[in-house]
Image (cartoon, rainbow, N blue to C red; front, top):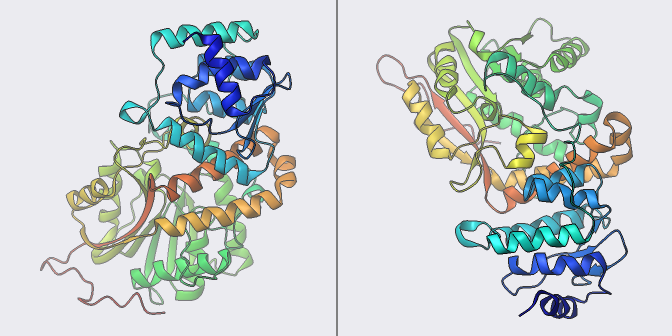
Length: 444
């Protein structure tokens, strides 16, 4: 069947309006769908349109968007075009999430879980792009795309990677987070809990699992904006040393310590975990920091936390995991724009690292469904204050963050990513774990 005939039939089947650019794109898109429906409605810059009327609308604003997809086919090209506004989903964040879900389904439908063009299809696609005037040199990467130098997970590059993600204005993060500034999965112990209540429940859960009591020494590795450190000191009487390599986080945590009168109980340090010399602490917590360590350095990370603990001391690790067939870094968009050098692994591999370091794993608590709700609450809060986000960080970064939250929610909902709390201990010389045989941390 000729390309023109297939295009005509495709337009008829998909509710196309006129030929134009959208009509020409049918010949490129159709081979990817295995005779299935177009997952989104496409409207091109010339007003032409194809696709089901009930589907989310993907607006292609310029030829530059197609040029990005020629040079960066797949997730990265689409993300670059969305972040720059060259493509848009004008129906709002619900349509954006629905569109991502539909596109992901198509993308995973090919052999090996990926859609690939044959050489002949690639030639046809290039001809179509040429006919609509979209061929040309590769567009420059968006300014918000990370540009890191040096060996991966050197201390200097780690500082740059963390800075790219965390050194935005704290006011920007406050747009979506609860008042504690907890930037990690919450725990919705009650079905109708608010984000603030769920984050407090998570902090209490961590402190109970660690068995914190007044005067105990807690090391918080990767403290973020201090939610756990402040909570443990204020409500459990712990003496806390909190570490981060983000100067902006140190600044905010220092202010919050002073505001709450906790200077005698909380010390925040601008310090890499590899420079840690702390010993004989009662408990160590590391909440969603291990993803930034890297696979090669994870044994050092685990050994450092073990070395800081006294025998019988406890570790509470909260960390994102991934399904075995999912990208370790979260995919091209996450790796380039949001969390460069991040590495997630299946839960079993993390447990293996901890055991190899000398920990005894005592309990694993899967929280994946709680992250679906957490991100949904973050996204709702963010959307309600989107104009403030643009004012604080600019349109391009604000769009990147919206895409990040929408895509992250989908990844957890579909089970491609998970999150787990792992409770472990440094055994006593006798071999005893130091924990009670029957856990008491689950009490309310």
